[in-house]
Length: 303
Image 1 (cartoon, helix red, strand yellow):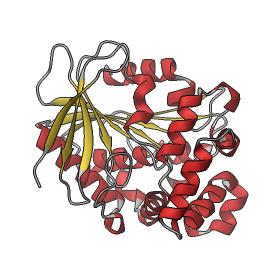
Image 2 (cartoon, helix red, strand yellow; image 1 turned 90 degrees about the vertical axis):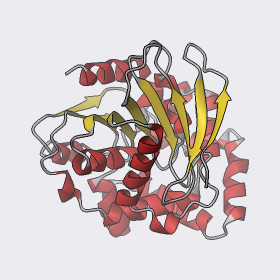
Image 3 (cartoon, one colour; image 1 turned 180 degrees about the vertical axis):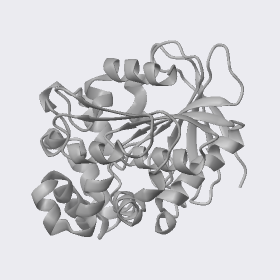
Image 4 (tube, helix red, strand yellow; image 1 turned 90 degrees about the horizontal axis):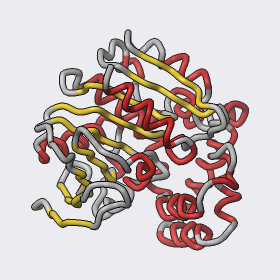
């Protein structure tokens, strides 16, 4: 398979970016590359979305000048990377390997990582497995220890992460009928009911722009969601012990998927871990507090 390249229109207030499709062991991976005005060779800021997202998750963070190239992936199974995605092989390790395949193909040798939800877990694994290449990790509401426990023991999870267990059971039900289940989610996503269904993800659901709600509906992938939760449940978090790069781990104070105990456990992952709970925020600080998140990312990268 050859790499496909095409130019795309720019986002408001941002540089022009291009879209490429790069082959990986998990299937073709669509990636957006946004080059900095003064490019610093082989260094990039890399964004990894969660199990209810795509590269568009990070659009609120993109406007403004940039010191480094921005790399935004649609991980295999999501967004524009659904064709021939090998979800049965999508472990955390395999997804991280696919990310490195993309970055190697693009010519990047070191990177700062920003991961949301499941993407935070992948980013932390990359920091553990590629310590020389990883300069920093920002894990935004990483779905780690609590989610893994709830997938393995859903009845116990109802007591600790009830909204996550509810979504897991819904996605499993929608994955079973295949295309019919996906079509049903797409149909609901175009109605006001979607805002109600997604309300546990936000501190103030009424304040979330309609396009963000519609985007989450479009990005819902039941089979990929189930594969991702299975991957997290099977992952050995002990691999994070001794991560050497600076880590910023944040969650919202109303986060229904990342409990406070997850940040407590993450604090022991390495000597340079900073944890923070963002007020008036749920699972999507990127959408609810984008200015604060941008400031935290800039501070992390200049440590």
